[in-house]
Amino acid sequence: MESNGGVDESTRLLRELQSLKDSKRDIEARISVIEAQLQQSQSNQLLDKKASSDCPNCVSDSGHDLTPDMIYRYSRQLLLPSFGVKGQSNLLKSSILVIGAGGLGSPALLYLAACGVGRLGMVDHDVVELNNLHRQIIHGEAYIGRSKVESAAAACRSINSTIEIIEHKEALRTSNALEIVSKYDIVIDATDNAPSRYMISDCCVLLGKPLVSGAALGLEGQLAVYNYNGGPCYRCLFPTPPPTTACQRCSDSGVLGVVPGVIGCLQALEAIKLASLVGEPLSGRMLLFDALSARIRIVKIRGRSSQCEVCGENPTLTQQNFQHFDYENFTQSPLSPAPLKLKLLPEGSRITSKEYEKVVKNGNTHVLIDVRPSHHYKIVSLPNSMNVPLANLEEKLPEMESVLKGVESVYVVCRRGNDSQRAVNVLHKMGVFNAKDIVGGLESWARDVDHRFPTY
Amino acid sequence: MQLTLEFGGGLELLCDSVKIHSVDVDLPSEEKQLTMKHLLAWVRSNLIKERPEMFMKGDTVRPGVLVLVNDCDWELSGQLDTTLENKDVIVFISTLHGG
Image (cartoon, rainbow over all chains, first blue to last red; front, side):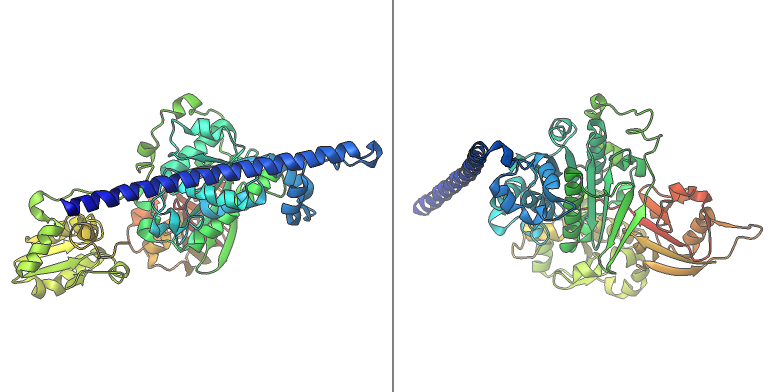
């Protein structure tokens, strides 16, 4: 009873703590909004006073509406002859939507908030995780488990409390995309999957918004401006979606944090150019960034296609049918990329991680084959496992025959339990009939058996 | 004909993870000019080591692959009919979606 009371007590305290923290955050957000409003109204008063006290002939009106605070804050941009007061005024009047507050969105949002975009919107439904922090530099440890949009908005407000920051804590879908995107002048695609990229591009064409599209994976990045001034849209370039197997994800293939950082910064730069009407946007061209060889290549791409189903001469997509268009089906991949869960094997050819633990504890003779790529195996592995990557399994099998002979069972493990099933199919085909896979792979081992086992 | 071929965006994984290939491609017999169509067939049989379906579909590249001839989209030079010249640089790049 007493120990139960202790548990109840700490649950109650934890709840109270969380609720106090939430209230504190809300109050802080309100404080910064009110501070910004106060600052704005004080500098407006200052301007009014100055305007009314000066003689009409003195021309105090310098032809812009920058307040003294704005002039000081943005002075280094005002000093740029090619940007100057005009560029800054345009920027302050503009609105930019950043879709995705991840690796690309993080630096983009920070720079856009800092440089003085009048209204900055952000869309994301995700929460901050520890393995995001190496690249999603807008988020800090204190926000782990909390909304990315909340975290990013707080960071932007702490840099610049004088701009309007709008939080869209939801996934962008065909049902809300037109409404959200229509409120902004410029869109930045900082998402991480193919269906979102098609959906955002189509939405921008339907609403006539220029799109700054960036992507990064591994050690490479790509950047282009679409649907700008008669230039091509994403679909002009990629009318047919690639096969799903060609769409790699950062959570599988890895990404060096600074690579999306570079592309995200360039996205902010292109958006600033569009908003301030300064410079030559990267439209009709594409920037290709190769971090490993330190090369940036800018190539000329095709113009707007008259055959394009969205922006061509006879478009088939309208605002009406956009809302019912199934982008997941079109690209054959999910909008919010969740790990794939295959089921290729019958129950009898699989065991759970808990059952495998019993096999080990009982000392049953067995072989454990880990079929992940060798660089995954080097991160972490189960004791007494042998690493034979799936790609090499067939060719390595003859060498393994002596090891596989005479054991009760052969078990196969991978990271999540998909490749292990493919591997068991290969083994069965090659005559190793006692091969079974561990359901859910090393992730299930970490979840159900050994909580200290590292996941990645 | 001396050509430089580059693979990026993950396509290099199909050719032993080598991104840049300096190659010498012979003109097909009875042809006067080397076209991209010839080159693609040559790449498929000489450079692509695995999963050719990740590079080609039918006689052209698969959806999602950009082809650049001397830093210019091959759509602008005639796609498969683009004729190549000595020392041309051809880039094959797979579009990325990560972020």
